[in-house]
Image (cartoon, rainbow, N blue to C red; front, side, top):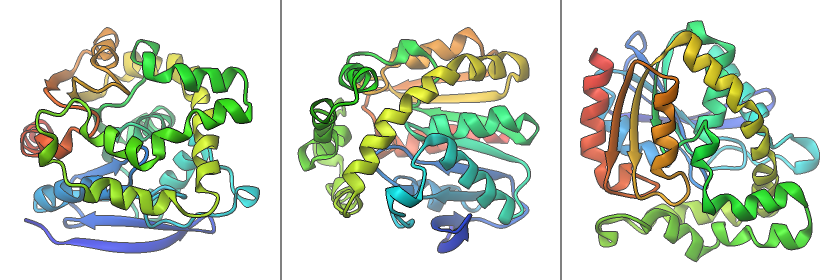
Length: 284
C-alpha cells in the first residue's frame, strides 16, 4: 500500500486541493471525481495502486477541500473545470496520462482528451456518460430546468444534494447498503452546506447541457483516436444506467467492458474487483 499526500496549490488564482500517490516517473493516472463528492471517493485506489502508478486526484472548485470562489467572481462550468485540471497537470509537469472518469469527471475529462488526444494513454470510465442513451428518467427534472430556468424547477433539483438524497446516491442499487460507510455522504454534506454552494450546484446542473451538445464531438474523438478504454460500471445505477455504458461500444473498438451488480458509486462496494481490473488493464 502506498502513502497518500494531500496538497493545496494555486491554479489560475484558485486554491486547488489534490491527493497524490506514487512516484513521479511512473505511468500517470488522473482521477476525476463526480457529483456530489470529491477526491475522497478515490482514497482506496490511491492507496492500492500508488506502488505501481503515479496518481493525481484533484477536487474541483466548490467541491471537497478546494476553494469555493463566489459565483460573481468565478465561472462554475464544466469548461472552466477542464481548463483548471489541464493547468494543474501542466504545473505538475504531467504530459502523458490515463484518465479515470466518473460522473462529472466524464465531461471534464472528455473535454481534456478531445483537445489533447496525444496526451491520453487510456480511459477508464465508471458511471459517466457521453451518449444521450445514458440520460434516462433521472434526468427529466434536470432537462426541465434546461428548458425553463425558473426558481421552481431549480428547487426540484435541490433534493439530490439533501442528506437523504446523498445517502440515496450511495446506497441505491447496491447489494448490501450496510456495507457503505455513512462517512461518504457526511463528508459530501460538509462542502454542500457552505454558503452559496446550493447555487453552485444548480449552476452546474444547468451547465450540464453544454456537455450533451459536445457528445457528437467526443464520439468523433472515440472513432478517430480509438483510445484504449476500460468500462467499470455499476449496472444498477439510476443516474447513469447501463444503457449509457453499452453505448460506448458503438464507437470504441479497444474496449474492456465490465458491469457490476451495484449502483452509482461502484468503488464503494466493488473496490477490490475494480482495482484489480484497473491493474490488469493498465499493465497491457
